[in-house]
Image 1: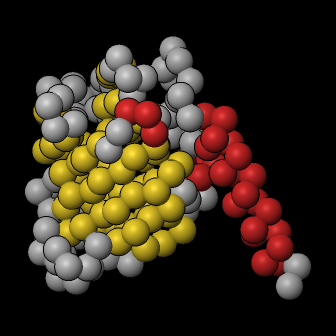
Image 2: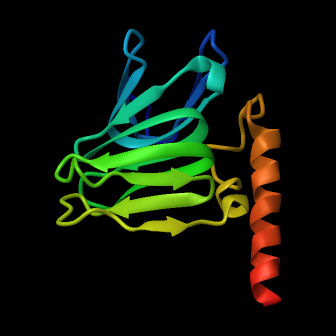
Length: 165
């Protein structure tokens, strides 16, 4: 599947999983193995725990997640991103199969197109990511929007507690 330069798309599956595609996104999906293959562009994947494990792969990395909402961005000549909005995930660079990154809500990894070392896990402000084009402008809310809102509140509380120490 390929989206145009100004288009976006949303795919809804019978298990209530949702995939949103950004502009200029090239990807395929293997229903038998529940694997997304992102050639380029950006996708948001939201799958409830009941949907089982979903896998994603790009030219440089793989990920496996269950009960999550995440954004995967793959650019040939720019940094690649994997952001977890809700849930937990394991992200592994193909060059470093023995150094997987374990991520939780509000965490991300950013990798160059040709990484020379495993990526560092960093924190992201989920509330800012939720203002993006893969989240807004669609007919339906994300299935995990209430859980993501709770995670945003957890981030705010943790930030407030850290500032008060």
